[in-house]
Length: 116
Image 1 (cartoon, one colour):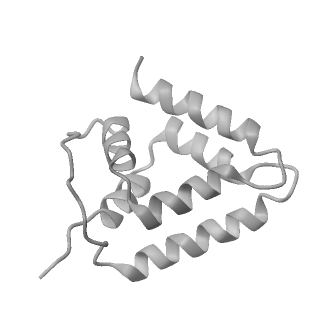
Image 2: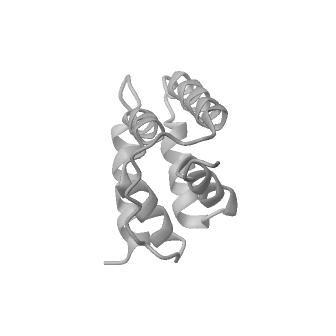
């Protein structure tokens, strides 16, 4: 099964679960930004057709300001997702279907190795 189809099915499932009082999609996003698990970078690169070599990252991203902005955006989406429509899941679906360049750039920047 292709990475795109797997991501699409996962986002559809998360969108359906998102109709509850708490957005699990936002919580997964917060975890991904703060912990930087290898699976997110591998999956994103595979979704965009990029090499999927292991990262071996252990240090925090050098751009703490970027990570703070992404966390703030996800927290805002978490509050917005209290409404009857799961906004974060819809954004996730659009990322999987449209593969906008900004998402790959954002993930690459979050996972960028520390600079000199």
